[in-house]
Length: 305
Image (cartoon, helix red, strand yellow):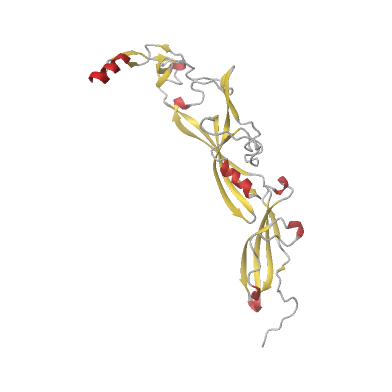
């Protein structure tokens, strides 16, 4: 018996009742919807197509699955994504952030307040030079500069003499009065430091995801890789990409009095971009440094012109 067709001929896709909208809590909207159409019409959906209901047309098609059913009917399940227009004007979502912290072993002389005073530090371990010569530390070699000339000319041996090393705060020992090589903590009168060669350094990392609606904004993450910032939005170039309960400023002051410098504590270390419907999904990582990132090594983010 031949098929008898009644009702809508399904030459256009028909949105079925029961479609669902999900909000991830950070401003990303996801719509799951089912359409019916005729098998002979082929694939009617293109990535980036707007959702057919006007109030939600800011959601664009991300992917679809077609099922070719009996009686020449094609069932299409579509997923649309978009940014809630009431969140940041629909330009980007709020950042989804996770924070990871831990401790790792580092050389004691790399501790931020080893020889510098920080505004947030009470102690300065070794103090600043000049240091005082002392018999407490090991003898260190001194090479006579005049003998270098004779060595170059005659090939003779370099004369080597010894002198006492130099001591700073807490029994910190150095090879000369201006510092030089650190020789360890040598004074047993300071048991918290004596013989110590390492310490447990804090490591703080922020990892997050943010969705943006323009490729130019996504590319800014790549442009700002390995740059430091004292604010959570990289001087206004990016969305606020660290937890909103951390308000900043993220800076550290080194030194005291007129001899001070201020360094940014945030460094953008990773950015991955993925096309997501008509949006861009940016996965990123930020390293936090207590002493800050020196601008001679890591460029500082500056406000857009």
